[in-house]
Length: 147
Image 1 (cartoon, rainbow, N blue to C red):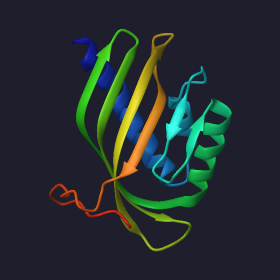
Image 2: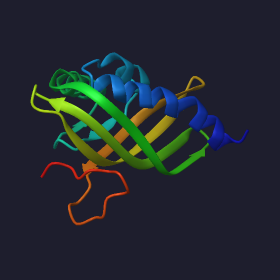
Image 3: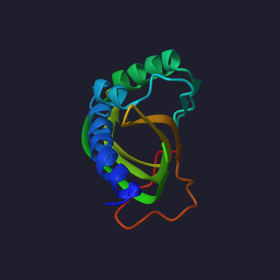
């Protein structure tokens, strides 16, 4: 197996499980995947821009407190690469969930993650997510995000 396949096998299943958990209000699996070593950064779809583990961990706990009733989470990988101790993924996240106890709805985000290998284990060091523009055609079966 090559370097990229090793990375994808190691990381993506754990990341999908962690994202499903946070969308059901459980932050711990996501936090376990993130590096505590600087720099770590977040450019979130809900408008947050954070740098540093202390700020990210507070933001992740805040997000988890707002999310519930996730009935579906999927990640469509568009591109990935790994070289040495750095790797990245680019793709679409689709989630059906409730926010702040509201009615269930669907979202679709474009997401990029950067990973760093630390002591033989891949850790996330950056996440950028944003909503798919309303004028971009959705993939078959996907619903448009909230405006």
